[in-house]
Length: 411
Image 1 (spheres, rainbow, N blue to C red):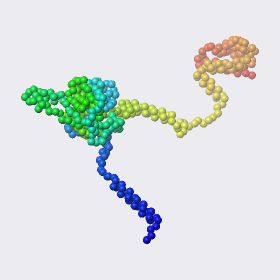
Image 2: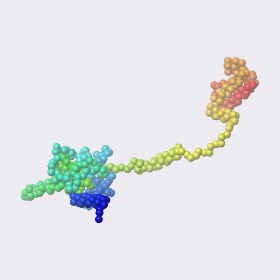
Image 3: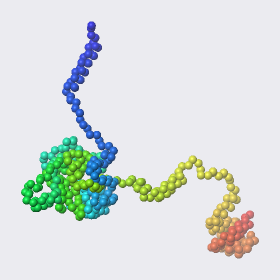
Image 4: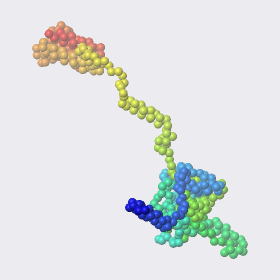
């Protein structure tokens, strides 16, 4: 059997494809990798969703208001995660008064009130030996909890808890018994804190009651303010992205000094009603009235499909009706103008009959016109006087007299 050229080319092509497939299978390795699915629902909107569920399981009551318009009860703990909590000037003194009355405030160093006796400082170089958490590096969340800011790497490092109250209890036990000091005070256990503290530390200007200390110093500390206390942390390690790294959850719960029945307030946002919703809530009647007025104005000035009323039938008016209508209008609005117009018509007719009319005074004109028209000269002189103020009834008689004289002067 003789093979054709086309069959040979197809065979070589199939062998080449098979060789490439065999090389890919031999040179590659297929492994399974677990990829965390993104948060959905309430967990995507609430940056403290996970820790809230944990503290609720521990018997605490969680309250999540949308803003800090009102303060928690005096015995509650406030976890302040909002960046805009001090948008109103009265918030600072109100929060201080609440803490001094017995409240417990938990806040990050970058969001702390100005009256807290704690400040953040930097050291020239960061300590070595810190390792990233088991999960891949995470970027720190934005203040709103939705999108992400530029990456801030999270590292895990060893920390210890210190409490001045525990130290006092141990010192009392040493003084009350013949127990060696080294046997009584055990070194605090080390835990793993995963945060973006870097080369920062906290300094307090008041006695520290409780703290979490790393290689550099205080990373979380609690100080007394009045009858209450304030806990300040370098980094908010309680967010959904970090709470399960290392011992973050246990350390955060320890910093809250959580007890069964405790009340925790989480204020992470400063949400407000939209402007239109707030206006409707505050002044619904005024908005309804304004809406009706606006609708009426638009209806009144809008484009129409026809006239408001049927157009009148056009008709011609006689000259007599036009003159009579104009005279009635002038009589109602300005009688003086009508009197002057009638007087000008009389003078125009008298110029044709009285010689040297324009050179004569008013009395002489009246006598000359009265001689021609057989009208009383005194009445005509008074009718020709423009300085007199006449009531409407006298004005009608005056106009009639002048009109009669002008007609008698006409040829």
